[in-house]
Image 1 (cartoon, helix red, strand yellow):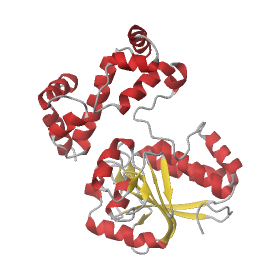
Image 2: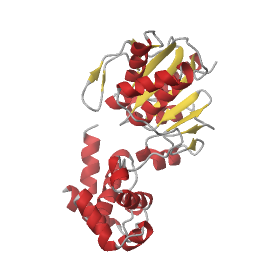
Image 3: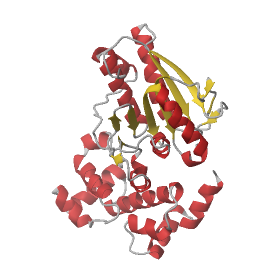
Length: 325
């Protein structure tokens, strides 16, 4: 029986937490279950936090999570959720991947949160399946796993497998699960506990930039930023962006300075450089490839811009991030 089939039965959940995971991703899964139990007055969810070696996991915020159990061949239940973020390739080796694939058969549903989708893909569980991951890693994921039908959706469900793009999409997924299994009223009540006005569906695209209130307060600036984020590799002239938003260049300049305290060109350059930095830190792409993917006409031009903005060269940035692992 699917975990999404209407039922009042309890779901037994194992949260497999990797070191360097995000506290918010963990909380989005954990606290929604806690709230559902409290509001309903029943134990709808029973969970255990597990790690691969049974030792505490240090999260990105430096908080240490003590596991309830060690993840091993005895693990079983209704839902297995693999939570990972940075450096997942170092925290789950070949033997761990075989274990996860083997134990996945003992669960009704298996999910990957944020970089948890990388671990599921590396274990072979996502072969021939639709999936998503955090928007920062979509291109790199597609390169590594061409056998996966990758989508930029907030969360994806394919049979017994599900994947989410990060903390907020995980919250959306958990509300969806509660709504489908335990009813719409409970999902609304859980959402209200966190004052969460989530109106996003599974297939909503993950934004490169989360614009929040700006989308409502100044939609012209938001529209311009959406154009920029879709054209990181082939930058569009500010004049062309203004024309597509149907305002003058002068008005676009005014709105950006009023809302963001910088010019459209400066914001666009910042967006491209931030994308480049993520590639330096999170991938092994060569500097020339990163320059091309972020719209710089040469590696030297990219390096000059990067050093001026970050006060260190791209090579120094990569070396520093590797030393921190």
